[in-house]
Image (cartoon, chains in turn orange, brown):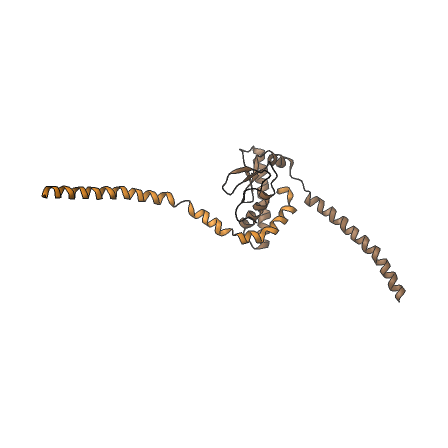
Length: 71
Length: 139
């Protein structure tokens, strides 16, 4: 009984250690991969709103018409 | 009194017509050079050959590796475009990027079949008879 108990406790500790060792690099990996790309896209979307594009559309058309040599 | 008035009316009508005709001629004379201002032949050729294309940001881009001449030509046009966008952005109370993007929507819409344009995803596509793939914010 005592020997098997010790064996079971050792196993449990090893399993926990293993779980922690696997979990830490996995977490670190997630953070590194996900952060860099996203903020850039969000900024673009905030800077150019659809209503602004609609408001400027007529002026843009006029500009293109009047300067056809560069468009 | 009435006769005098009649005379003036009769005189006015042909004068008015003549003035209108002069104005119309002047309008045509002014409109032709600005609306018909031709693209540089090298620019037109590079466009038609699909070497350069319209980007969603309102500027020209290289579809294939450019020759030094084409690179210089595109840089020159893009500088002139940026100057024009900057001027209109200030006049309309918008940013250069907003005005350039709105122009890009229009420039991609008006590409001719065979010409190249960049999709919102960043891929170069050849314009065909169907509407071009544009940003969802384009009118």
